[in-house]
Image 1 (cartoon, rainbow, N blue to C red):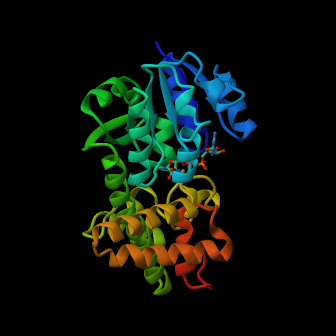
Image 2: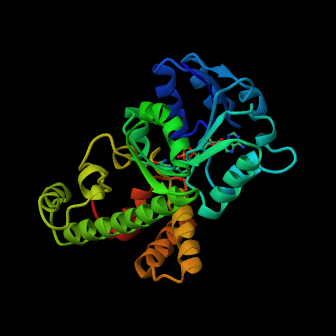
Length: 299
Ligand code: NAD
């Protein structure tokens, strides 16, 4: 069993850390929010007082932070965490960030003799709790093999996308499609309901027809259609509108970099930006349905 530092215990990091504890590992945890740390302490983790306290004596460092700037400011610079991490420790960053940031941090780690992979995840908070996440890894094959036993305790599928940063590129392509699919699903349900259909009946029909997709089948945005999804909890928890907006912004950056066309991705980015600007940034992204359905539509 290993000593693991886990930094960033939010909607995703919290349950991922819990699964590592359940698997018998010793965890030293840190988050800027003390309550998030206390939840893990109840499960048996050590409450570190800072990120550098968390990495003392560990074999593995895992981070799960919101965005590129958080990851860069945690690891890089003269006071950056890279300088406190024990030699030979393995670094796994599971945050969804820009590929350029992932490469920058991995290169700095390598310069100090530390192996690092980017391992962004797919599967949402449900997957994090159940330990069924998909990990999309960028980095050396040997580093992935070192990470595999830990990733297997938090997820079911592990893909090697390529060199450092490749995990992030694959993840962004996936999330751009998810953002488009959710907005499209919400629009289709709103159209049906506005024309007199029951949203559950329509969802059942689409789920067994050619419009079937993950959003309609597993993460339905219409309240009352499905239990245990954010739509059943006033869109609390889940994957925030602002995080989806961040990912669509990363897709736009990657598209500019490669001169590729993302017409629907840009349209989706604008829809989520408007939804966020109207005060819904912290709600789950499936709440985009509220912006697309007719105001007089029954729940
Ligand atoms: P979150 O906002 O719930 O959690 C992030 C946590 O990081 C917070 O608790 C915050 O306090 C902490 N944090 C920020 N800076 C820190 C620092 N310097 N030191 C210690 N802790 C710090 O976000 P989340 O939903 O857990 O998402 C985390 C990452 O996973 C994001 O990059 C997101 O895009 C990605 N992701 C999220 C989902 C989802 O469904 N929520 C799914 C796949 C991927």
